[in-house]
Amino acid sequence: MTLDGLSVPIPTLFADDGSFDSGRNAKFARALSDAKVDHLFVLGSLGEFPLVTDEERVRLLDVVIESATGKTDVWVGCGAPSTRRAVAYAEGAEAAGATALVAVPPYYLHPALASIERYYRALRAAVSVPLLAYNIPSLVGYALPPDLVHRLGRDGVLAGVKDTSGSLDSVFRFLDGRPDGFAVFPGDDAFASAAIARGAAGAVMGMANLVPRLSVELVAAARRGDAARAGELQRLVDALVEVSHAAPFPAVDKFVASVLWGADVGYRAPYDPLTAEEERTVRARLDPLREALAPFLGK
Image 1 (cartoon, one colour):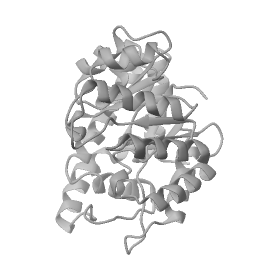
Image 2: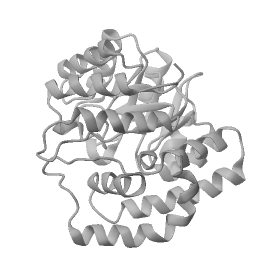
Image 3: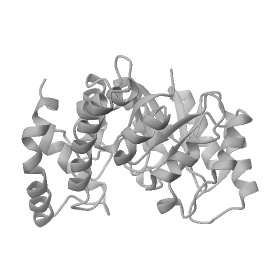
Image 4: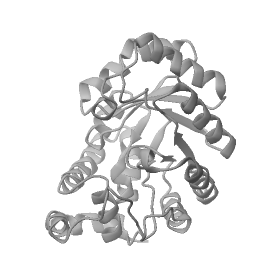
């Protein structure tokens, strides 16, 4: 397993009554594997991890890991407000077969930096698979300092970082001064090609759930240094990002995946299906892209 390429933060899918749906999650994971994505990232933000019970986590990991085929492996989100719970999630994910773990720092209440450092060191001590920090200040409530992340990288605690800060400068700060072999992944789709050109190991792209092959080809072009092709594909991804901004997250991404490639999706309150008006708004933005997206949606 290598920490590079395209990682897809997949949604968690529910039945029509809001219960966990093993079949829908299995089909979705297989479809992305068939599109040859490198990594499925389970229980990230798009995966609505705060909604998933501990018992459902076990079932979800079993389903996705069993459904991943070919070269596709599975990363698992294990961050939690308490160190004890995060360690339990990490141990469970490794036992289930996760190839890497991604951990947001403790959220809601803001620990001291020394406590955040101890949190990541406790996770490292509990598992042997690679561990990535997850910087997402808009949802956690604070940003991880690059110097802390780099120090933990030099000490062998962290193998990399996923930065979803909404700032390309932030991605660059994690790239600059990073230890040898330390993997940086932008988590904002709009920054994928620019970050890879600057030295990122790959990208974590939510839009890959909507049009998997488009993101696969973008990351491949960027990594081989084909700036022209990467730029062309990035513009199309950026247009998809604008579509996804037309309605509430994460329901909008599930809806567009169902429209574009027939994904069988499902929702859990309070992150409900789009209203009829929201659907019309999304379709109005999506329809002008249909022709450009068509080559990436065929068999």
